[in-house]
Length: 234
Image 1 (spheres, rainbow, N blue to C red):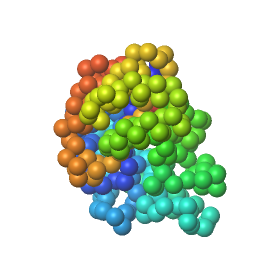
Image 2: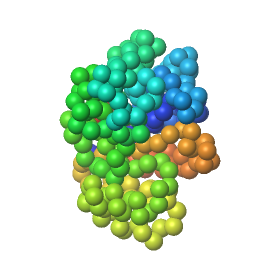
Image 3: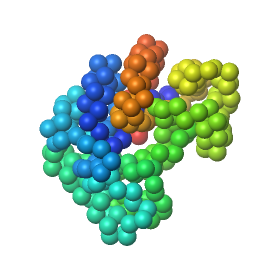
Image 4: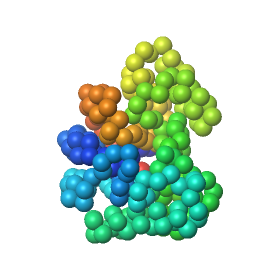
């Protein structure tokens, strides 16, 4: 079975709007939320619970959305540990999934994250296969250009690359995505598609109609493939 799921980063206040639409279309999603973020306002504890109450998943994104590569081992560990504890105090549940801010990770950070979490997601794209711990997404819900799809699929997942090549004449990025998804799900027996992004990005570039189009396309055609983050990892 090819599994489809969504994950959203940064915990911006626009996550509330995103959660409402996800729930409306019964679209499973993981929200990776930091305790604070110097770049933008983040969800309050009460707002985090509003997302949780919609049966959407909550994951950690460090305590202060700090990129970890430049930190000492102790400081990097504390960022991960404090972010995990913050969300556990808010939700009353164990937080077992993590996402590296900015997608920045290395072998040292990977080892540290394994001490605290069951999985860690990156920002690497164009991947349709996973590992036991490290999770790499497939498509960014933002138009980075066809050349980006070509390059990253060629570097990371040659099977996906064939489908990317097949839609080069399609003009709109989101039409490209739906065509690739449709071709992949109709021709492959197993694998995954994870779409990731940021609610503040959807707001900034006025992509809400495109999001709803994608949600409707998936629920109308591939509802049986939609899974929660936990089901996705299995």
